[in-house]
Image (cartoon, rainbow, N blue to C red; front, side, top):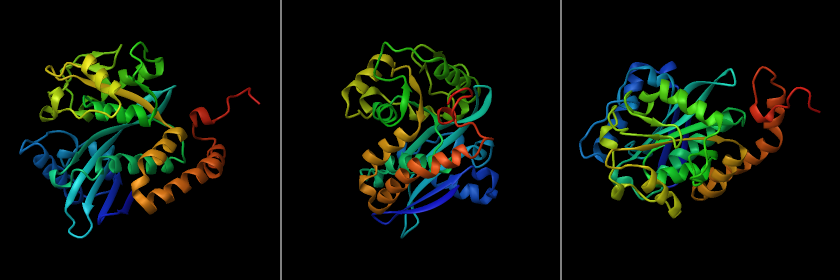
Length: 305
């Protein structure tokens, strides 16, 4: 998948899926370089040493990268890096979409670019999968990010119910991610993981060191319960993170389109119409006519009528 979209305000969005499989090394560097520059601006000169900040490695064959740039000058203003994490689910190979790192250059903040980065990529990826549900993961200590995941996707753990326990499927995915994919979010091998609450302890010493925040500097969510959750469960002095696991399906797509695309005018309107049309007609037909692919909760089980 490669997309180029226009946004209001002379902005252009570029989205590349698994660029390491089809881009040259020079092209990969052309994507990595603006990400490093935005990170330096955001972190006052500090540098990160994992994932997109290296122009070589297996990361590029598993990544979905989104850049927002000024369509007149070509200057990069923001980026998001998602990563497809291979896992086993129900005895089959699947990919979990890890929502990854988002950064906005200081001069471009206040334009809701963070939401645009997440929204467009997730929706387009959902459509490219013929609207088949998929699992997502996110690692963060920022209440605004934790709440964004909790309010956008479905079956998210951990969430606001502090008495809830992870389902076997959530726990299985979290265990695989922590065993095989720590490098995807810059967490060292010796960082402890609490499987009862999906808390990664002392998470910021595997390449993401400069992202660690004090609680006072971690942006709050509009729903106060998420702020309380993070304050109670995470040790900010130590540098804890939540690992959230959830699902993207038709309901999550509707939430995104209903709540988050109001400011995207023509793009949002087109996506909303497309979502309704695909969900009601095209997607079910395409899914049922493709018996080679597992459709999860969309495929009728054997023995049912």
